[in-house]
Image (tube, rainbow over all chains, first blue to last red; front, side, top):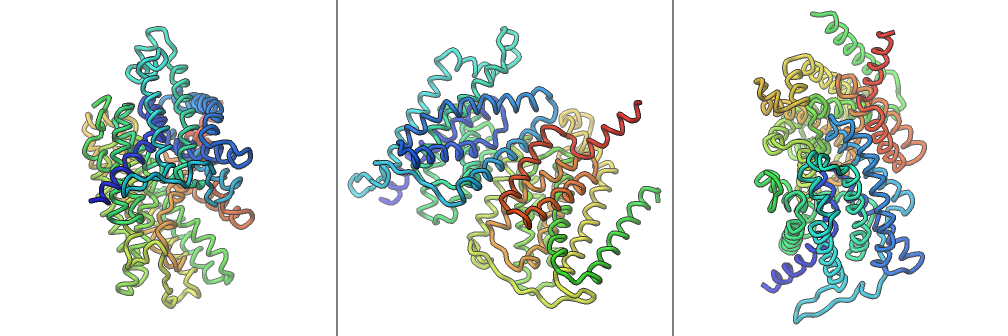
Length: 290
Length: 317
């Protein structure tokens, strides 16, 4: 029973972290319908950026994440432009080739990271890494608490941005009916480009959390394809609240399976959940369309 | 028989005769080690293209089928000492069944959902095999090759010939599908699934047929790999690199005609073999990624698309 409680608490904390790494995808795939399979690769790339700053200039990982955020924003703008010019504008068959395109990009990032940093695991140093808090019998690693707090703030900020600000509402409008936005005299492509930029910029902090929670390696993105897409699809495409709930469900299921069956089953959990959801309730928990 | 059919079967027979002859004449083993991999990728990409090319369903589960093929062979070999032919046949049957199951589960989804679901299946199957003690688990399993059969001198040469046979079978099936009503139906549903359904094309049934055939061929191609490597572990047998390589080969060659994946597999397979020898396997993956992105952006119809465009341009002038 204690073990179960422990698993649930850790799972909730882990879930919030998963929400932070998935929320960018929730915008790019959930709202903009971009088959962004390279999202986890961008995430790992951001983690290596944080690692680089932390390792060579001794900057706190979270601060480093903030520092690379503008860079990532521009990177996202460029990436969407490229995707739009080559696929969306030409229209037909964008789905098939779009996925292939992003997979190619993910592979290129993976290999460049391997060539530059090697295949070894990398981690960062900060005062809050390696310590843990005690609550009675329960011990919670402080790094998970930091990830939880930052992730919660990040998710909240992004959902407020999308529902309260003018630009955020414009992004949701594009997601709902692109043609109508065009008729209102706005340029849907520029809005989508902006949204994709935001979705990528968020990865700065998410990448910092990723390397705070556990060491990273170049091919880590493959495991996160399952986790991020599982969360976004379970959430119902484009729902921010749903993203948080879905991520917590994933986090709790992972820790429970981990403590009962062992770590070797861990990679399959997110993918199995994803399959189940696609088969049973493809519109997700809080879907935006049927 | 039509003239094109005579030409096709003639060249297939020539190809097999040539392969048989080389196994008798060349004693250096290295060309066979390299050639085996290229032939294996031809089978895989031709098989992939049956569902991915004709029907437009981007399957990322190639590594799942390949890995299941490998482990079916190992299971049969370990449990019953089954000969190579039985291993391959059994793998084909298992592949067909798996293709049927995958189809039931995923073919109602479209676009990226189908692709993501196939990745998910790969990981789920890989994890199951990892936790299966009898098959060696995560550490992998080693197997001893049985003695080679006449007229071959070494086991690898025999495997090359077997894989060449599989190439002919796969291409013949792909060619048959392309020219029959199945292929036309698949192309119709690729262009517009709803319109195809409305005009009476049994879309779901056609997709299932494509998935079953493609799965059976992929598993069959994977089965001899166990004997080729004499070793298998889940992380490499189910590696996502297989899925992306095969997808890249098919897209680079072009998926409108069966010759496309063959060209793509030969081109990319030879390049990769050369790079792996001369530089490193990381650069290999880099080249794969760059070529995939370049072709998808600049030549969406692949190499055969480029040729067709040129021919059309020449026809106009």
